[in-house]
Length: 107
Image (cartoon, rainbow, N blue to C red; front, side, top):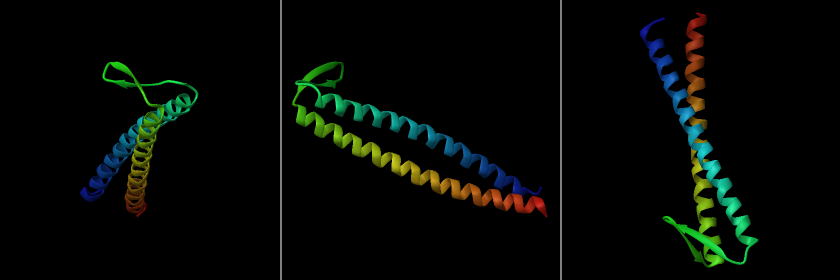
């Protein structure tokens, strides 16, 4: 195996590490999304709504809280979509490099 193939294998390993990092980030955002959706559902069932500010729970207007949660949900959804786009690009790059390396090895 020549130096060029070794570099491609190194790049492939780097891409796989990036995929793992994106996967962990995506999982964190999905957890946040679940928590936000649960908070929205619970806020609809109650008379009073509280918002955590620092270490305090502060009584807040239900509609303002719901609007704030919906905005956070939208932001988290956008982040998840962005990560998925990046994952797809990296997977395509990794597949291309893998095919090149495997093609060279078969020769």
